[in-house]
Length: 302
Image 1 (cartoon, helix red, strand yellow):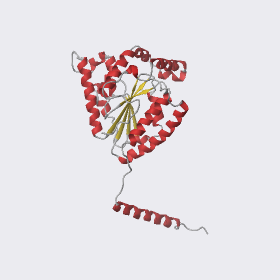
Image 2: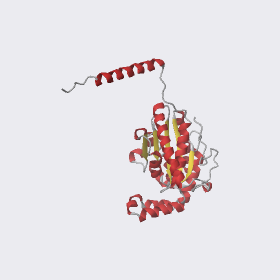
Image 3: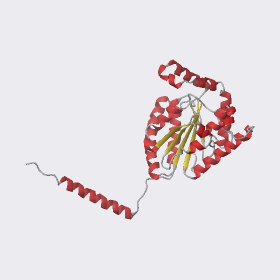
Image 4: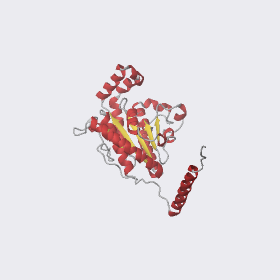
């Protein structure tokens, strides 16, 4: 297990997290948007370098999980933070309503198929956590998925939390570093962003009437998030609750946590032995000689 990167957004592991105490806006001493933008640019460049080393090192995979209420900024944050990373080393998967085939398996099945390989960064835009968040708010959806009738909900959620903890601990033991981010947007800011989608034709595609229906269930969602984060924030798979009302600050915080995590892994480019070094030296001489031969092989015009 790797050391957990310390950060003010880290959810404690003792079950003491409370949604009402979690920030949706940056603290007063937070840097300005301009400074955050500058820091993010630097961090994105750093992240690119660390991703290359992660790929070359081949000991670890990095799994980033993003959860949030509608309009919190998941998509744009993923784009902003990962914009400088080599696409071949990064995989993004968005999990929406399960298909009939996915519902025919256990709730961890479909995301397990998308876990990152060692050397790569995997990003889940929503995840198996939907099964203890939106499904908890809408328990009627369980009728199609759970082979138990009637359903003992209290027992079901406890079992799913246990399954998630076991699943994540298994991944961590086998080299997958897990960082989980809840983008904590306020209800007032969400309203502002939803209105923005209705005031700009180019953003109409982002709006869904379902957003309004889910917004009415805000308090139920907050209760579900609070219990979920307390039950599943662990040293091998920590949750970070990031203030989402200010996007530049939010993105900078996330980039800092990711870079700090990669720095703590002790990554290194592979080293070679003396015998391999001799072969490389010989190959270099052969190539240099080939270069001289090629330069001298051309015929003069005359």
